[in-house]
Amino acid sequence: MQAIEERISDGAVLKLLRAMLRAGVMSEGGVRREVIGTPQGGVISPLMCNIYLHRIDRVWQVREHGVLVRFADDLVVMCKTREQAEAALTQLRTVLAELGLQPKEAKTRIVCLQVGGAGFDFLGFHHCLIRVASRRDRGRSVTFLARWPADRAMRQARDRIRELTRRSRLLLPNEVIVEDINRFLRGWAAYFRFGNSAVRFEKIMHHVWTRMALVIARRHKRSRRYGWSVLAYQSPDHLGLISLSGTVVAPRPFKDWREKPNAGGERRR
Image (cartoon, rainbow, N blue to C red):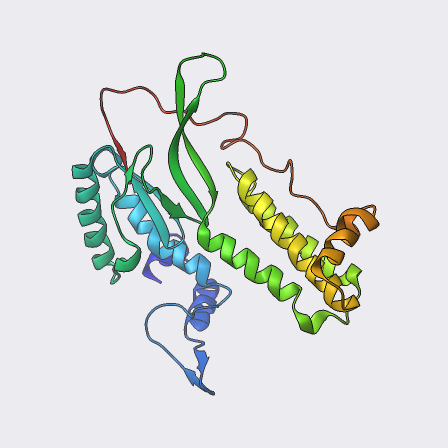
């Protein structure tokens, strides 16, 4: 509330926000009213989180500790050297401690962002440096930051598709199942279409076709090969399933990210 009062002085608004913070949460049939924090799942909680953590952005020194990229409570710090990365991590712990917080140790690490390195996951994407042959200048290579859906995002997508095609939905018409799958695919692809996601999009589509072939086979008590035949040949539009082919765009709108040549410098997270 102190952070909010730096910008807002309207008493009615402040009173409403205090009431929302004190509303409490249901836990095991009872209401628990905490005196700190904001209720998880509350409609105002994401905004409150960003207001509270904005103080990290304000005190961060880019030249000294690298570039901080924050989305709600998830962040990365891009540094030029390991020494700078270690100093940034120390500074981050200090700033968070002043806010009564601490980083989650299981997800906090320093990663060397280099070709052939492990890379890192951020906001559902896996980021890593790759080197490919230049199309314009033969004999030279281009290094750029590639990104695609992380392994966890792929597992979640497969789990959702399995849920939409589970055995208990066999009584539903194909049109209903396909409509639900298409709705999920459109939303999922709209988020992950930025980057180098074509290969992983193909894997998700193969999983969709496999599951739908299984649904058809079970409904008609036939083999999975029969289900694939219905999808590929007997239905002119593949039962209405959309395709993710051609939906991927460049890593950055209108311009690819390119690494500038340097004198042996390293890029680190």
